[in-house]
Length: 188
Image (cartoon, rainbow, N blue to C red):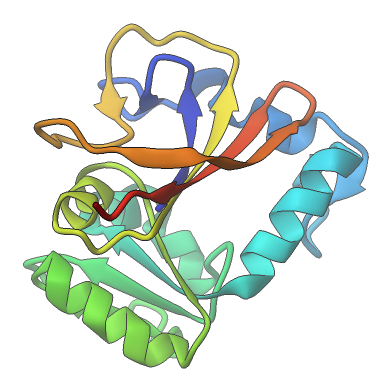
């Protein structure tokens, strides 16, 4: 499970505005992708590139699909995207793109594992990520913490109830205007 997050745990405000959360994606001089639109610090590039390269499939919610238009069929990582949705893929939307629309979170994660063929399945944080986390389907929590306080908005863990323990962070990397953290999920 992964996303950029504010210090107080939000991935966007109530209107889906990410504000300064993604500023670190353009404040460096090291390109993250072929487009040249994403340029980060050397430290962040050395962390993000290998992480993205390991991902075979992304699992996202329909809301993220709709607000990004599915990245026009070119996801930021992975070869496949599984969208948790009660609605089908839009007619004639990028027929060449490997996007799969599945109605439930558990089924979506199972489909993603099969498609990943041994590679990492990345789950976007938020409501879908929170449901996967609460169901025990998440092994690792990765956060890129931006130095901003939102006060309210869309929570990283969605509507997760109760207490859930994580291990000590096994990755703590300070980039420029971002702190990269990664935790294994405790299985007690």
